[in-house]
Image (cartoon, rainbow, N blue to C red; front, side, top):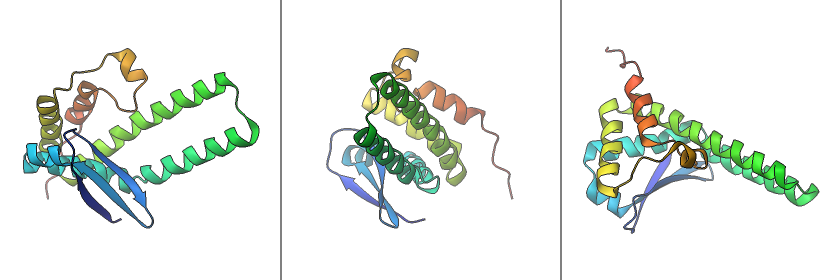
Length: 157
């Protein structure tokens, strides 16, 4: 799978990947590029590529299109919308763990953990509460770092 990378002029710390026909494009902020070490940037880009190989951008677009078409065609009660939203956020959080694991396989635990450490230090990101995490599309940093740290070391050749 092919992924192009574009640097977006921004003071925010962002990295996101979208479907682009038969390929994908990762957008990464200039602040990330200017602030992070090469190893941490490898970790970030490997994470974004983890989304690509797991087809997350395609799955997300398909799911959102399906939900929108059902909503427009049949209407959906408010309670169902809340349940769908919470299930969607849970799915996004799970995909972050999948992309993290793929990044570790593609680079190293060190690169991926450096990316988290540098992101937290530079962006000043605080760890979110369990309540806030429940309504977020990303798991908290401490849960992601714990999951990466618990991964078995890659077999040496």
